[in-house]
Structures are given as C-alpha cells and as structure tokens.
Image (cartoon, rainbow, N blue to C red; front, side, top):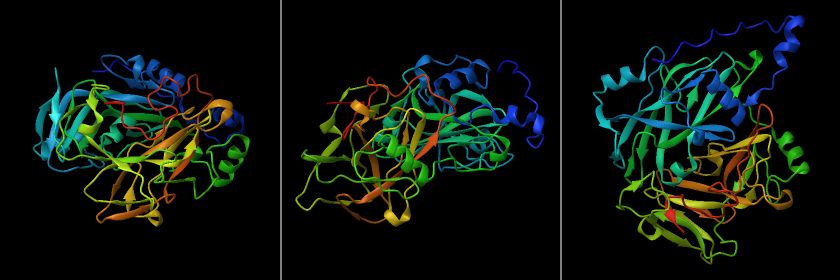
Length: 391
C-alpha cells in the first residue's frame, strides 16, 4: 500500500477580495518537468519501485506497464462507481503475465495492463494521456483507463487510485514486459473558475500573434481552430513519401531499439507523378506533413482529432509535441510532423498538400527547465519510422 499522503489544502473562495490575488497568483497550465518532479516529491504521483529519471519528459511523464495484464474480449470503460478490476472480473478476463521476458501481445486482440504508477491528485489537477511517439508509429493502439472513468485518456480532477492501459496491437504482434513504456501522461493545473472547462487551447488570434513573433511553421499559416497541416505526397526532393505496414511480419520487441530491418516490416511508398495515394482501410501508413513545425519553449502542442470535413481517416494516434520540438537554427522550424494514418471503412484518395490535421497549442504553467533536445529520437525529423528500425 502507498504511504500516508499529506492532507489536502483548503479551497478558498475566489469571490473574497482578500484571497483572490493569492489564489490566482500561481501559474496555470500544463506542467513541465520540474513541476512533475515536485508532484512526485509530494507523492501526488507514486510508485512502489519509485519513479525513474528516464520517465521524465519536458512536459509529460512516461508510464510503465506492471507485470499484471489481461486479455479481454472487448474494450470497455468502467463508468461511475465501478473499478477497472470489477469490469475485468465481469468479463472473465484471461491473465497474461508480463514478468521476466514478458509476453507477446497478438495483433487484433485487446489487452488491459495495470500500470506501475498511481495518482493522488489535488482538486486543481487533472491529467490527459496519449501513446508515446514510438508506440503510435508501431500501430499499437493504447488508451489510459481510470477507476470510475467515463472517457479514455482522461484523469479527472482530484483522482486517487490506480492507472490501467488498454493495449491493442493493430499491424504487428509485439512483445512487452513489466517496465515497458507505451504511454505518457501530462498534468494540468487550473483555477476554480476553470473546473468545468474542457478546452485549454490557444485561439486562432493568439496563434497568429505567436507566429508573428517566431514562426510556428515554415510556410504560410493556415488556421482553422489550430494550425492546419497538409500531407506531403510530392517527396520534397525525396523519392519516398511514406511507408505501408507489411502484414504477417515478425514479432517486434518494444524494448529492442534499432534491432529490426525496415524492409521486413515496411513497404516504401514512392512519389507518383500525379502526387496521389489511395488509402486502403485494411492498411496502416506512416506519412509526413509538408510543413516543418516548431513548438515554442512556453507551449506544448497536440494533433487534434480529425475534422470530419478533412475526410474519413485518422492521423493522430500519438500526437503530443513537447516544448522545444522542432526548434532549428535561427529560430526556424526544423521538423516535419510524422503522421500515423489509417482510413476508416472505405478506401480514401489523398492528394499532395491536402489538409489532414490540426495542431493545437496550450500554455505551460511556467517556463520548463528542459526542452525537447537535439539528442531526442525525433528532433529535426523528416519522414521517419520508429526507433526500433535500423536506418
């Protein structure tokens, strides 16, 4: 059992003038690395084995799978008053041990794994999760689940309890073990007047102002409740514009980096004269944006769910961008957004420069003490597969 936590703070009434300045004086927004460490120090984030230094990212915390996992016949949400454990028992879930060398999770099957980390959030703190970049590029579908949860990847204000991860490999069967990191969580501080608020992103007017100070993209700014990104099918000087996953490939160990030959798992997609690509609904693609992007030091960004007006496909499996991502020489954007693409239900025709997604931005609660750096796996990236494949 976790150790005794400190008592919760008294919530003051913001209407009282004598406390208003004190209440609103702390910064609100996403937490950077130093605030994540403070949460660990105050045991708002807790793990029996402790938190490893490698788990900290500039504005998120990597989450680790425990040795306990279950094969389930359907995805689920526990709903109010129910725990994930209760739902697993009701579904007669089959245990899968991830101890030692771990286990192979078969593609097309849904699994639920307990995570090592636990939370004890304060009334002003909530969390949001998403797959890590490498997880998305392997087409592993993951979603965070909490006890009593009514939405995936959402940790409500004042949540106290365990964390679970739904895992469903789509293109490749994968080997995972206790300690594997497939997902990450970020935390947001809000003041009482924001308690029922659901969106914290900058509006288009603010984005335009930021772009004028320092360019967010290397081309013309196109705004539609976020920065519109367009697909590259012309190659931008390169002959390969994407990769299509090869069915019936070998198992991929998620902890084995640069250990696999690209050609055993991916079919290159070459630029065509007509600059078009038909997406097959049974296939998974790695493509890239035409634009190069960069994320300012005081912001983080996320690929927003696809606007239905753009088409019936998905590009945002792992769409979180840390502060400092893509920052190049002389303040110029240097990294393209790599897109994990899957069409829905029917084949879909993509054309070069077609809009495929929106990048939305959110402020950090204070300047971070670390930015996404040059030694990171995907800094200054072009079209790039996950770190599991040899270049």
